[in-house]
Image (cartoon, rainbow, N blue to C red; front, side, top):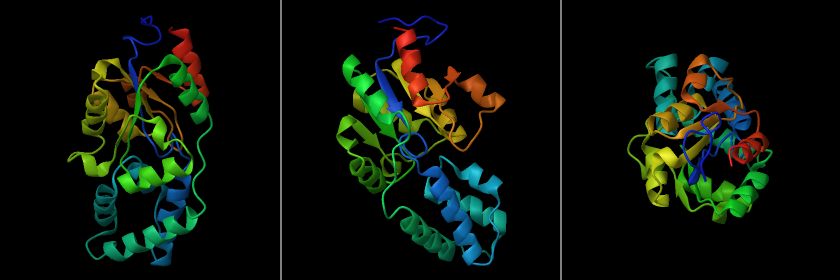
Length: 226
């Protein structure tokens, strides 16, 4: 199957999904936890700092927080409180984003393999994808423990492609975050941003094949290129 250049420049042989903010509706809950944890310790967490941390692993976020608030900030106390707030907010599970089941069904019909490349832990990925009954619908899960370099580096996407046995140029990468788009683009994948909390910037437009308002739109675009 060959896609016209106006849609996708190469045949799509696999799809690599981000998780948080793309498959599961977690980013807004995590942002609330970040802000509440800081407030409970007597600090104000700016929205801009929350935005800068989207798509990054927890260790990198901790460094950014320390740099922002200074060397006296009790970062370990903060991380413990943040985890407590996250656990409270996510205790009932996290809903799937709109269009997830539809795009997975569509990929099933086309017999296209797919994987998840996430900055979250393996346990988090298995828990939340399993809770929603979609864990087994992915041929591979690449979590933060599986690579040394995380997003915005390309390593998670490259590893996911390798596990599926597909050349990165033939992979469609779906992301909602700026750091995720940077990672997928650096991996040489056809990248589509489906925005969640972050609006697409000029850089995102340059690095993406296109910006889609929803996963339903991604399905339409795949069909349009068939």
